[in-house]
Length: 252
Length: 155
Image 1 (cartoon, each protein chain N blue to C red):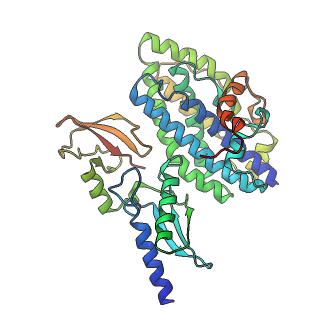
Image 2 (image 1 turned 120 degrees about the vertical axis):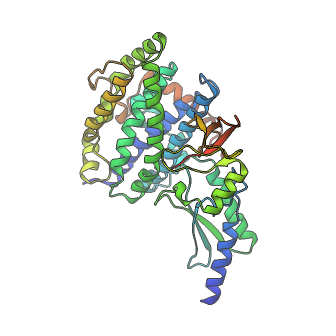
Image 3 (image 1 turned 60 degrees about the horizontal axis):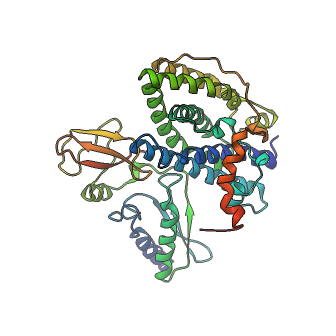
């Protein structure tokens, strides 16, 4: 049986993935390698933050303590954020950013497809909207992975480095802990473990076209789902939460 | 009941005429984002709106514009966000597509087809970027007249 608290925490995990990755991707605004990609990354960040808003609203309603999307997004301590470690991974270079985006979009596309059947109507509605956006991001990022992997010697080397660095973070996406198990059994959220086979197949196909080797997925870096983050998270939150800490309750 | 029906229709006409803040040549009815206009039990007009994209910054501006337009016409009004069924470019009306092209934005083409140039009408066009100046647009170029143009993404 999934309690309201379970549903709240499950929705927070999902919302935090989108907010934190959206914040990361938005850091490229004005810095991308070309104008078109600057627009693309800013648009992707906007979509991610849009999904996060809707998820925080739903989470806040489920919690029933009057917390709104801004309070959930800005006024929690680091240990209360439940995002995947992959989402907070530093932008590094464009190869890391685009491979991280490909991995997340690929996972999220499968996740939203499964969430269309959620027993929680509010979540099924968000899934129906976000699945289309995730498909668009997936196609864009996969095109870049192929182009950079099968590109110049330099771009190939950078993609190899990105793959080696991000690989250890993939296993966490598919972890089915007790909470994820209860939510999956109640058909509230998809079972992350069930998405791994389709993700692995898509990844193998894209990396093969990118002439990149495919390392097996292992869960060596994990902890984000229970609030244990990497060193990078504090720096990200300092920037994200600055305005609300400096001017509490400030609104646009 | 006749008067309720009449005021619902009047409210619908007012909401439908609100222009889109990003593409002011089109109304929100042309874009298909005005899903319904109803009158609640408390007498307030409720306009149901579907966002084009989850993070579209125009969503709040549109909600505010609709509420304001209805209030100025003497209605008590509020908006509701309708995520499901999700908005699709298929909901853009024929009139909306015509206005969009006249405004210089190529309307969504059917899946896999290249849009025609909104400037010279040539079918020989190429994609520059999958993402454009707003969440709902991509950037294309005409290889006949060489002008770049916005393309309203098919969703």
